[in-house]
Image (tube, rainbow, N blue to C red; front, top):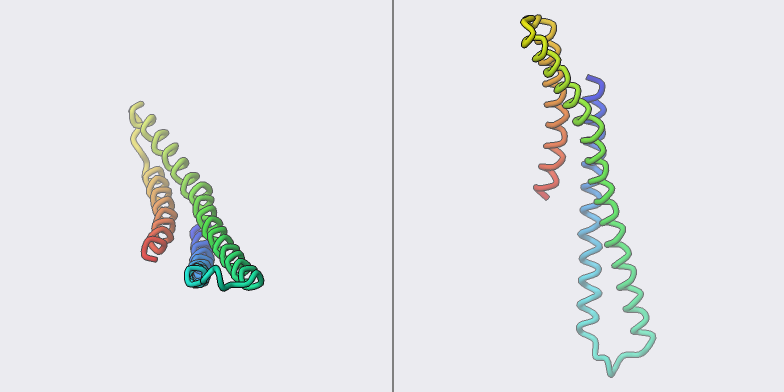
Length: 144
């Protein structure tokens, strides 16, 4: 149960980081669009070198902001990937091994005990919980 709670906390932290990064990305893209619009309106024969430099500075700052926001989104997806690798993969692997061991026992003529059934059920539920956390994270991303 501890791992599930940890995963939930990771999910909430990731969701908060994603929301903030997405908000900042939108603001950065608006600033970049505004700078590009200013560039389109310029009359090149009437502009001074200093004005060109200032517009280029604005453009470079806007591009740097967009790059930073994309980096935060990449970090979010890396965190989701690690969450899947660490929690879901290990639980699924354990579940699979337990089921295969039980299958071998049943093929050998030994019936499955209630303890084995409970163990398989608990592992399946644990894997399901982690998969659900990953599903919620990916669904929230798709909604945005």
